[in-house]
Image (spheres, rainbow, N blue to C red):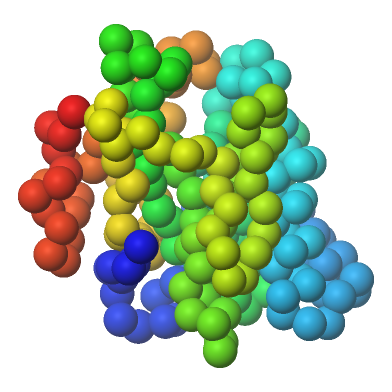
Length: 217
């Protein structure tokens, strides 16, 4: 897939915020630990990816009702859905000086069109000499597996476009406001499961691919 960037300025994919809070002591400590374990950028990125994927429980898989949003919240509580885990991976990578953005897919909530659709959050990171690479720190479960790889996408889900699933090409500099709002408006993960946005809207899209957003499916 040819990715479409929200910004042409690489420094926009290094900014910090209250959600991508790599200046928080918990994130800064993990970044320092990674730097102490590896000096090569690819090795550092692999360690960051594995931590976000494996050390943070996916809330839906673990049946954990707590909603975490920021990178530091995910680390502090040890849990988060795909969005929180992508916020964490972006914070770790940006803290390491590796540009990182946010990507989304439209997936069936429970494997059937009748169950409805929801956005799934993942990342893209920029590596000099390679370019932008999508990474999915969702966390493994039976039938779902992702890996860090610079030259071949190994994402969590294989999408079924014939049943309304869709892979968006956009790389955002910040998490989608609609995603953050849904998380903030949900008292628990049971509510959030159904409150997640169903698609990227035309207003949220950019570039040449807006015809495939919104009401697809």
